[in-house]
Length: 218
Image (tube, rainbow, N blue to C red; front, side):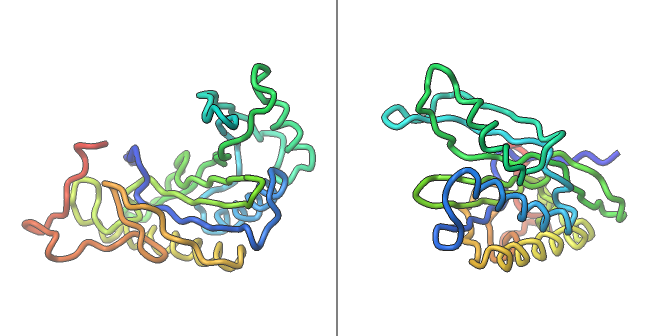
């Protein structure tokens, strides 16, 4: 059975500033997320939105340290009643609490070196920020299947060839859907975002044919 290791930070991230293209607010964030999930579904990166998770904050205090999870078992992201249900989860002690960012939860498919498909929870992370001053979205990945070397520094060209092009195609389609190109997210110890994928390992980074072993931080 294939075991997919997950990094504590993203290996790649892409940000879309949608202020000039989409209305702000929770309802707009959810309907936009529904359309983005459909693109991810077409590429096998997220089969459906299974749930939502978000934190709360208040102005003047900041993050409250309270996290809410909401199942979408019997609902869809574009359900017109969903914004009301989400806001109904607001903590009673903080009636002015606002949503920090909504994580869309779901499973996707990655492909191993032999070409076998595997379902993985949280294969990609889609985060919507429904701020009143403008909508934004983020897509993150946390695994090494999108990179040319695994977390141990070993080359895995078959895994890379099976998965990286799927991610690249999905990102291009998301750009087309949203009408604005994604900005690369910040680099982490586990990867560098470059274009529609992760930066390739340069020859001068190799030692005896191996890349950087990042497994010590997993």
